[in-house]
Image 1 (cartoon, rainbow, N blue to C red):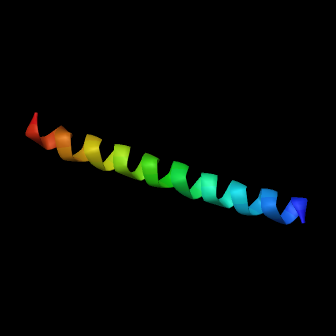
Image 2 (cartoon, rainbow, N blue to C red; image 1 turned 120 degrees about the vertical axis):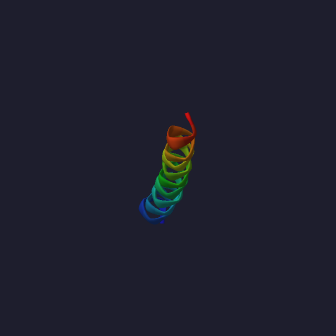
Image 3 (cartoon, rainbow, N blue to C red; image 1 turned 60 degrees about the vertical axis):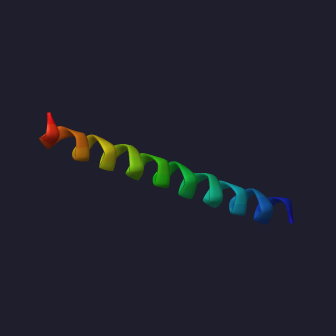
Length: 35
């Protein structure tokens, strides 16, 4: 049970990190051409 829950939490945390990374990259790309 603990291993499964840890895996699920890790996947959730990974997805959150990927989403935040994607948004940060999109912000940089959006700001790039404007400057």
